[in-house]
Length: 282
Ligand SMILES: [Zn+2]
Image (cartoon, rainbow, N blue to C red; front, side, top):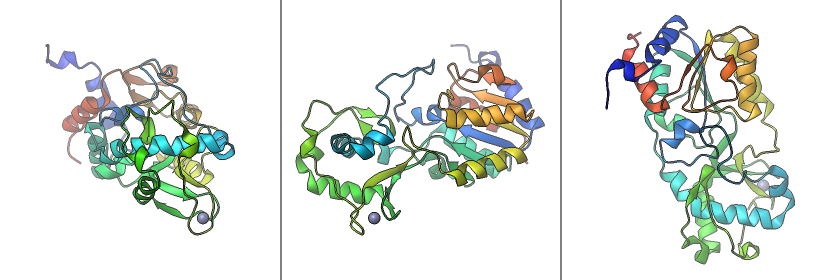
């Protein structure tokens, strides 16, 4: 295999981009976590590889959908809980430590950027390691609910299934009506993972804070996202409208390819690690 610098197209241009724009607003997506063994919903063309995730309306309105969600989550949670940050997460944490980024906005719900040491982060779509009561808004660790789900559903806990995105697992053809889901112990309200489901609105304060950071930034860096979800795509639109240069590192096609100043179609972890290695110390 050719390992000469020319085998890594775009890295020089990316290094130049980061050097000329010292305060980067970073937007990340599933591509960053795929290298940590977390499955993604979409392929390299940004198309669905699997059924779309459960919608907010189905989760809240349909008892069977909710039981099915938690049954799959019981089986899929260990994969999510054991995932560790990868090269992309570490490189972005290093960029922040070097003072080269002003915010890391992630569409991922796995918390791996925080685990890698990034501090100025906004989890646009929430965190799957947290459970929220829709009645009293109390938030509790997902790991606590896992213990309860296992106790209430010992037969299900023994099942194994292929891991799916967002702590889900492919578990089908079972009678989900018998899966026992607890309500909030404080108010009896419905428990929901603290993530923004499809069909649900992103909390306004997160969006406002992220747009404020974008305004302060010199340029935008998109890492590992196909930008197919509008809640992330609109930040690229806003950056372009404000005349801010946008660089992207993503292996496949994205929804915003025509808006980028620079696109590096290479693996995101390897590319960002190379970027960090090439940038002069600050
Ligand atoms: Zn409650």
